[in-house]
Length: 176
Image (cartoon, rainbow, N blue to C red; front, side):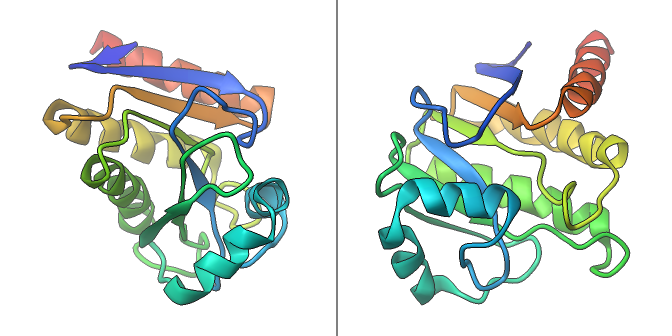
């Protein structure tokens, strides 16, 4: 699907295997350290330089985003976002929306033409995928019309069930 000049893609796979994307998004922890899930995969693939660079930016608060070099990844940048813990960080929907808005803002500020997101907060942070996807769809419809540099926005989802939710909700939003 396309929103204004931005191509929206949805795929399953591993966020660290997106060599055609300039910036990938890390579903980070507050200390921007190697962890489990997406953060662990990105940090392992990027090598120790990434965690070393991140020290200067930590801690981050839910909804915030910072940008670093990608180190040993095939991308140019990693944008680190701390998503909300569902049921703990309030208001969850605003904090989650801010993750996506702030990551896209950093992409624009750095003249990045392509970005790949995981499903932020839907793993260990417990955000229900259906609700999180509603937030994502709303944000991309809000921000894409004003973008000057970003031309490709990809959602890289770990599971086929998450892929199905994103595909269904994005398709429905394009029809309305």
